Figure 1 (cartoon, rainbow, N blue to C red):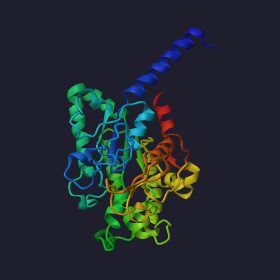
Figure 2 (figure 1 turned 90 degrees about the vertical axis):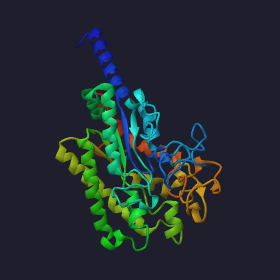
Figure 3 (figure 1 turned 90 degrees about the horizontal axis):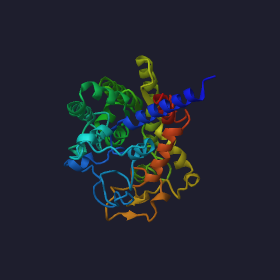
Figure 4 (figure 1 turned 30 degrees about the horizontal axis):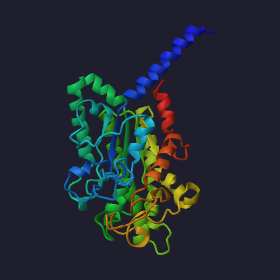
Length: 361
């Protein structure tokens, strides 16, 4: 039996190691409007959220470029990690020590495919986001040196959210889109998963070793789909089928990648099941509706975009959807809580709390 002094020394060393790991862990974010926290503010694009009432419940009560009434998923993950939120990569304030916190490279409107979101004109496609990540590493190397930079990137947590726009703003964008003429829904889904695999491998090649990959949400159940494709308020069949095809394929691809790499580098978050829970039974989660957006116009407030002239609900916490496409801050909190503590129904091969515990040893 170890002496009390030895046990105390061991405990202090363990806690010290844990604190060092968690404090030092950078956070990088890639993807679309679900995770963009302001990069598109710096672009000439229509895909932006920098005017009221966006940000109405953010601490400053001002729009930030987040497609939310308040915090988005990366913000809430940072809070759970006890870290300050990452700045947008294009933010001029992202310099010096702030670089060591990480960076958000996401851009609203983008997809897995380069032809997704062409209607938004100037957006940062995923290939450019990855180039920006390389550029970021060169900037940090100038501060810390290459070896320390590689360690920072290897130990970082990475979040990537892609796929929804490849359906909404590409495949289903027009009744006869180029991609619909080229592929049926199943084959299109297989194609974008194969392209996503290349993106994830590129992230790995750039040093990412712990990557949280979120699947698409319930595309047929967002207020926009209800307004444009539903006759009776039920989830629109074809976009919902797209989610049902895409998410299992994503999990399968991630398990295959991990097996190939011999490590659980990639972790899949089943966003469609997470959101389907509160869409099917909003009252169980404290929402009054999962059909009507808080901010918008037309049926289900699902037509067009959220502007200062839109209908606006007085209590955002009672709504699952903030605008025609994006969850409210409160819905995002439910999603992030499930990412951290959810069962294998939602998280494959493990949840984020388990990852943090393993990585702290």
